[in-house]
Image (cartoon, rainbow, N blue to C red):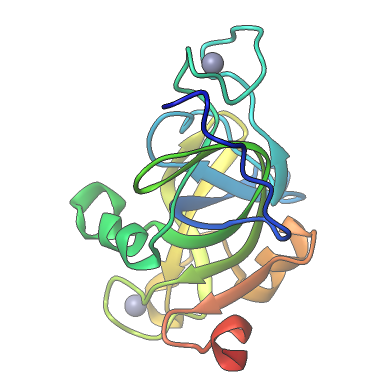
Length: 187
Ligand SMILES: [Zn+2]
Ligand SMILES: [Zn+2]
């Protein structure tokens, strides 16, 4: 990157897209997200600050480290990541890129993030998603959740999309894929 390029000062935060797994805390009190690549060990909240995944003490993002929040410019590009087998149950997030960011050809690496909307795909049976159910894996203290229709929950711990939004807080919108978002409705 050319250090002489002028710094960007956009009037509104850039928008980015990424995929993640919704997670629910073991005490069922908090909801958040787990990234799918670097930083996928530690869940993040709707509004959160990036911490160096290597535990180094430096400001994020740093040109000498690859840590920080990551997002793509393209919604379709992020959605394409859910085609791979291990990411089939991931959800699509639209995020506001806050704080300091580095811009790349395809996206951003940045310091602070607000998740605006989470878009959930259909149940693996292709039925209409009504719940997020325990996906059968997680991180210490956190259950990973996946989309499920009423018929596929089968006794698993589950919560509604509205309950997930309420627990995640900070004004998160949760949509089903195919629902028109507010942003699309006004444009
Ligand atoms: Zn770092
Ligand atoms: Zn189903």
